[in-house]
Length: 175
Image (tube, rainbow, N blue to C red; front, side, top):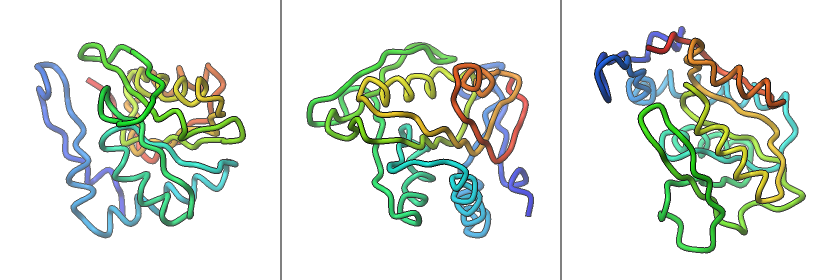
């Protein structure tokens, strides 16, 4: 089974000139979704970590399943003002504008090493912000696993240059 066959490409979404890689067609197929989770679990075995974090919202789909299988705590990295307790916040730039992500201050401690999972990496701004959230929480980043890498947008390469371990299950060009 080739997981790339389950990714739908939608031109001019969310704006003209963008070719959006849609994972909903992958997760609605039970065999493709199961294979995706199995591959993330297998790749995670290369890393030493005690917690899993995911970036809102599509990262939650994959990371929560991996967290359940590996019996590791799951940490949600959420958009601004979505978490009810004290938070650490990071502002960053997206391909389409600016954003903020947050994590509860009590989610990550100095003894924690975090695997960050997300559906896609493009320019890497969101992933870099996620790493900063882990680090300002006194945790360490074990690495990243992405379902899709948009290789020509260099986000994955930028993370590697910063010293992070990066894995992805498939690659597409970004437009």
